[in-house]
Image (cartoon, one colour):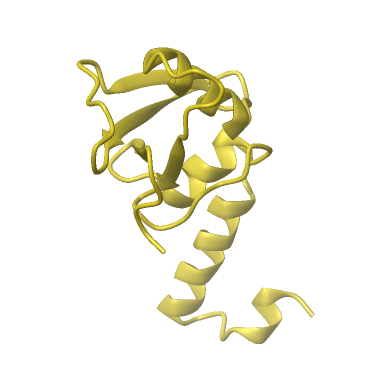
Length: 119
């Protein structure tokens, strides 16, 4: 049974729900670029430039590699990342999916730290 069959078709809530579903289901072109906003947490080094564009089709593993390079971190240096101060994405998460679900004012906020900051 489709969402349209379950929701009353004339209601405003039903239309909003259907619009939200269509937005979620619509893919982001992997070749377009999204803006990452890096924010230091705790004793992590603060970067002079915090906004970077990255292709939406990249994985979060690429973001980790980029961030390690920008911070001049060695492979053995601890780097913990969070999206919007709430959860740590896996390296195989696709940036477009993270952006679509968690972007704030046109930015995907990536908090980074040298130690775990949030449980």
